[in-house]
Amino acid sequence: MFNYEEIAVSMLPRRVDKVLDFGCGNGLFCKALKKMAKKVYGCDLDAELLEKARKSVKGVSFEVAQSDGKTQYKKDFFDCVYMMGVLEHVKDEKATLSEIWRVTKPGGSLCIYGINKGLFGFLDAGNIKFRFPRIHKFLYLALFGIEKYEKEFVRKRARGMQGDFTLGKKWHTHYSINDLNILLDGRFKIIRTFHFGLFVPFLLPLQFIFDIIFSKGSDVVKKLVRLDQKISNPRLSYLFIVQCQKC
Image (cartoon, rainbow, N blue to C red):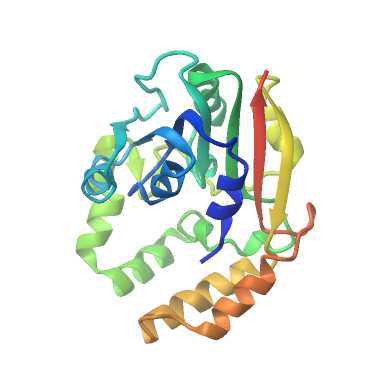
């Protein structure tokens, strides 16, 4: 829906050796990274998603990460690490960033895509499950059924997850640049920022409804999304991408 992947890839230095997509999910973003790096790696807590990734994305090395964010990669291994919509889903952000610092080469890059503390952040649908758990369960069951609910919010607990959050996470976190600097703790310095999107909390549900009614979605909503992406303001925008450098 949003072209954040294109923006994020543009931050990658051309033709680096090794890149990691931390929290890669089904591996789709790894396809874009393959055009920019000699070797692409992906890791995630969700073993089932990684199985799908291995089948659909060839030439990428996938690994299951631990619930505490630890990986099996060597120290100073990657030229660049991406966290695309991941940081706000983990319980211990500092521990996760510490692991990423460990596996990133000195002077290497870290790109984080996340949710900004913007004007309409209080409308984040991702926090319904925390604010109104009973309503969330009712709506989820009505839309997706008991089997998918059990898979996402019951069976995943054995792998340290609840839905797409690590266990113990109590909020879909939004960040200011100052918040990120505190979490990075001097290990990485932010060298580039990009804020975009203002009406995302309104456009996402609208897109979801149109996707259900019309299998290809709505061209009108897509145009609105493209226009919304041009709204860039550090205080108001809903989304951000930052490029950091390992100190």
